[in-house]
Length: 236
Image (cartoon, rainbow, N blue to C red; front, side, top):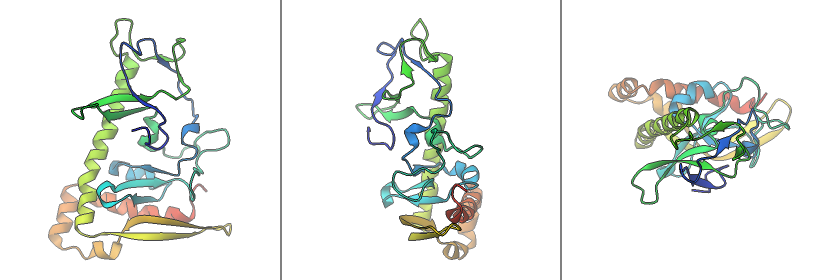
């Protein structure tokens, strides 16, 4: 689990071991994601994300996920400036907003456990920031809110899976190397992403379109297609 993008050392939260742990808010310090050009998205984020990022699909068939593209090259996130602040007013994907917390499988894979990246500099035992546990060893209000949010992110990611599976089943996703030519004269090539083939989608029969409509997937398709215009203007 330690190889999940910017997570360095994923550790299960334990009320005995971490009873004195506090977390200082990172106050617009997104240094942890500064070299991360692509992050997974839940389909319900497509509407907000499509205003700023190309929403593409990445990964092998079994692990294919929607992603927000935030840079044109490896280890580049152009939405984070030299002061490690996110571009003002731009949507921040939930995958990033949940950091430094994450749900992970327990050792026996029987349940999901709330974990943290204990390498994050905001964690401390000096009482700075929000306590994670009460003096009685119960979850503090702050941690309860964290858990609710992290669980909702996980649920929305799970809700996205049937949508992606249907796109694969209907062979609507095509691999494409995306050539980007920006107004400033720079050129980039994004390799090995997939996009929905709009022509193929328009050829679906009425029953298939009705299924997309009833399941609430149609707006996700259109948001994805609309987001492709961001390829040429990313970060501007």
